[in-house]
Length: 257
Image 1 (tube, rainbow, N blue to C red):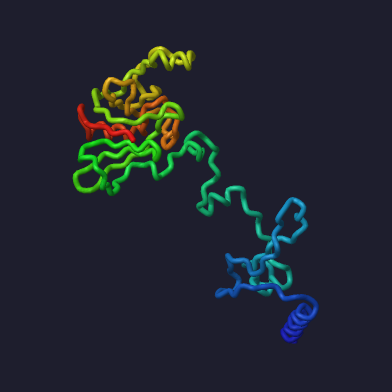
Image 2: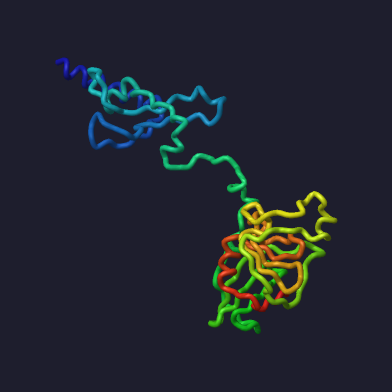
């Protein structure tokens, strides 16, 4: 008798809920009383002004005499879903926002097109020649198979660009820097001498061009590659100038166009 009364009571509650409100969305459960997926998800707050929104509810196992699961969800609504912890971003495997630094600032990243790569070359220069395309900001080391190694470079700023043919007259590793008198007149704040090293603006290697003051050299400002920023020298990333340095010798022809 009691069993029939309870069954009739449950059926009447379901009927009343169906008549008075829109039914919630449910997720089917294969195991009664267990769930790690919300059976019903209420709209979540989207701003500080929406804190009155009801929390999501789960149908889970309970210690009550209703047995948990879907039946307890009908009567009690199920336990409230805990708010997402601040570390939820890391739990999903997404990186936290890193602070902006010199290394992550996009303005200090080298455009991928200026990284070393092999390209086709069908120009007039002989294999072993260095061709510097000033307008395009590229240095080519011509190979003997119709290709060239292409490196990104920084070139002379307006008024300091030049063109012509030179030969490598000297090579130095971690060169010292002695600004010429003309540069010191423009920039009296510069040191008159700087020993070679990581902070030296000539970088890791230098290849001197003829008897001029111009050089192909490394840089302690790699983010300037691809720009017109120098006083006429050709600057490269340190890893690129080291690579080029090992491939050429004193006497190598250099064409600047």
